[in-house]
Amino acid sequence: MKVLVAVKRVVDYNVKVRPKADGTDVDTANVKMSINPFCEIAVEEAVRLKEKGVVSEIVAVSMGPKQSQEQIRTALALGADRGILVETDAELQPLAVAKCLKAIVDKEEPQMVILGKQSIDGDNNQTGQMLGALTGMGQGTFASEVVVEGDAVKVTREIDGGLQTVELKLPAIVTTDLRLNEPRYASLPNIMKAKKKPLDTTTPDELGVDITPRTKTLKVEPPAERQAGVKVADVAELVEKLKNEAKVI
Amino acid sequence: MSILVIAEHDNAELKGATLNTIAAVKAIGGDIAVLVAGAGCSAVADAAAKADGVSKVLLADNAAYEHQLAENVAKLVADLGKDYSHILAPATTTGKNMLPRAAALLDVQPISDIISVESADTFKRPIYAGNVIATVQSSDAIKVISVRTTAFDAVAAEGGSAAVESVDIADDAGVSSFVGEELAKSDRPELTAASVVVSGGRGMQNGENFEMLYKLADKLGAAVGASRAAVDAGFVPNDMQVGQTGKIVAPDLYIAVGISGAIQHLAGMKDSKVIVAINKDEEAPIFSVADYGLVADLFEAVPELEAKL
Ligand SMILES: Cc1cc2nc3c(=O)[nH]c(=O)nc-3n(C[C@H](O)[C@H](O)[C@H](O)COP(=O)(O)OP(=O)(O)OC[C@H]3O[C@@H](n4cnc5c(N)ncnc54)[C@H](O)[C@@H]3O)c2cc1C
Ligand SMILES: Cc1cc2nc3c(=O)[nH]c(=O)nc-3n(C[C@H](O)[C@H](O)[C@H](O)COP(=O)(O)OP(=O)(O)OC[C@H]3O[C@@H](n4cnc5c(N)ncnc54)[C@H](O)[C@@H]3O)c2cc1C
Image 1 (cartoon, rainbow over the protein chains, first blue to last red):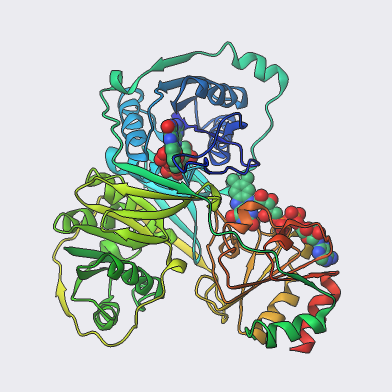
Image 2: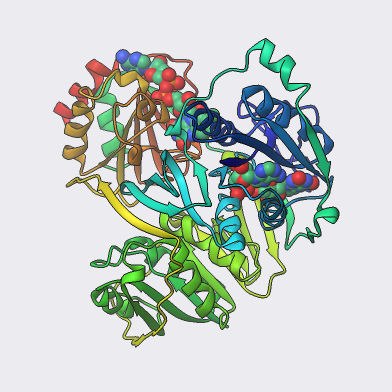
C-alpha cells in the first residue's frame, strides 16, 4: 500500500527563539532549520512498515517555501521514495495545510497518511485531525504503536490517563507521538541517493486551495521571565524556607 | 452570545478540567451551554448542571460516544455547534483529539491552548515551547478554542441549577472502533490538578528508584511526574511526562529531582508558583528557574527531605 507522510520545516528544537523587538513576529533570521521531530518519527514509521513489506511506496509532502525541499530530501534520505512540495511563501495555517493535503490525498489515494502530532513551532496539534475531517478518514492521534492488520490499522494512543487502542478502517490517518520509534540517521550514500529521487512541485493555486489565513497574529512577546532564586545549603534549610518563607508545606 | 463547552468526563464523573474551561468562557461572556456526550453519563450531566454559570446542559447519551471517539463526537459537536458563537474544550488529549476535527467540519481554523482572553475574538497562546506568547485574533464566524486549564482558575462546582436537555443525535461515522485501554491507577492526585508535584528525570537511573519519589509525594499529598528522558528510558509510563509535548502543570510547589531543565521540560512547569530543584550539577539550567536550588546527590537529599517532613 501507499503511504503519504507530511514533513514540516521548522526552527531546530535546540534553538531558543525570541520575538522581534517590535513584537510583530518571531525572529527566525539565520537560525538553523530542521525537519519537525514528530515528522521525522512519521517518516521512520513509514520506512519500518515498508521494511516489513506492508508498505510499497512512501510519498513525502511538505507545504511551505522553496527551502522546504531540504526537509523533503531528508525524508527521501531516510527512505521515502518521492516527494511533493506545495510551494508558497504565504503564511500557512493548519486548516490550509489540511486542505492542501486533502487535495493531494484525492490524487494519490494513499491507504495511510502519517503526520506529526504537533509541530514544535506552532504547537497547534491540529493538522492530522483536520485532515481526518476533510477526508472522512478515521484518526489515530498521538500514536505509540501502529499495527496494520488486513484492511484495518490498530493504533495505540498516548492519552492523559495512560494508553488507548483504537481500530481504524483503511484508509486512515495516524499522528505520531514521541515513543512510536527512534528515527535512524541518514547514511551518506542514502543522502546522495536521495538527491536523485523525484521531487515534484505544485502550488496551493494549482491544487485549487484557498489558503487565506483565518487568524491574525496581532503581537508576539516574551513570556513573563522567572527570576532565579537562591541556592540553599542543605535539606534542613530547604525545609525551613518552604515552611516559613514560601509557606507551601 | 451563546457559548458551547464540551465536558471532559469518563461517563461517571465530570472532570475538573471542564470547570477551568467554563472559567475561560466566563471571561468571554455569554450564555453557557455544556455538552455531555457519552454513554450512561446522566450523572455527569447532573454535575455539569450544578457548575457555576452554566445555563443549559445538553446530554447526548449514546453508545457511539462511549469512548469519546473523535470521528463520532466531532460530528456531533459540529452539528450542534453551528448555533453558537464559540465552542470551547479543555486542551486535554481528549479535547486536542476531537476539537480540530469538529473545527474543520465547520471550516474554522481553531485556536489551540489559550492562556488568556483579550476579547471575544482575541486570545493569547504560547508558541515555540512557551518561549513566545502570541496574541491571536480570529476572523471565523464561530471561534473554536482549546483552553490550557492551568491558566484559568476553576469555577465553583456547586451553586448552579441549569436544566438538562436530551439531544437525539447519534453520529456513528463507522470508521473507528474502541479496542481497549490501559489506564494508570493511582491513589495520588491527578498530575494536572495537584497542588504539589514531585518529578524525576534521568538522574533517577531506573524505575525502582522512583519509589523514593512516591514516598516523598505521599508525605506531601503530591502527584508524581517525570521528564521525557525518564519516560523514554522506561522508568515510568507516558502519562507522567511533563513538558511541551506532555502535560502542562502549574502547582503551588514543583520539585524537580535529577532533571536538567531542557526548554521542552520547562515549557510544562515554569508557571508553577514555587519551584525547587535538586541536582548534583550546579550548572544545570533548571536552577535558572528554581526559587530554591539544592546542589546535592538526590540519593542522599530525597530520603533526608522525606524524613524531615
Ligand atoms: C507570528 C507568526 C508568524 C508566522 N508566519 C508564518 C509565515 O509567514 N509562513 C509560514 O509558513 N508559517 C508561519 N507561521 C507558522 C504557522 O502559522 C504555523 O506553523 C501553522 O499555524 C501550522 O501549525 P502547526 O505546524 O503548529 O500545526 P500542527 O497541527 O501542530 O502540525 C502537525 C503536523 O502536521 C503536518 N504539517 C503541518 N504543517 C505542515 C506543512 N507546512 N508541511 C507539511 N506538513 C505539515 C506535520 O506532519 C506536523 O507534524 C507563523 C507563526 C507565527 C506564530
Ligand atoms: C520534540 C521534542 C519534544 C520534547 N518534549 C519533552 C517534554 O514534553 N518533556 C520533557 O521533559 N522533555 C522533552 N523533550 C526532551 C528534552 O529536550 C530533554 O532531553 C529532557 O527533558 C531531559 O530529561 P532529563 O532532564 O531527565 O535528563 P538529562 O538532561 O540527562 O538530565 C539529568 C539530570 O540529572 C542530574 N543528575 C544525575 N544524577 C544525579 C544525582 N545522583 N543526584 C542529583 N542529580 C543528578 C544531572 O546533573 C542532570 O542535570 C523533548 C525533546 C524533543 C526533541
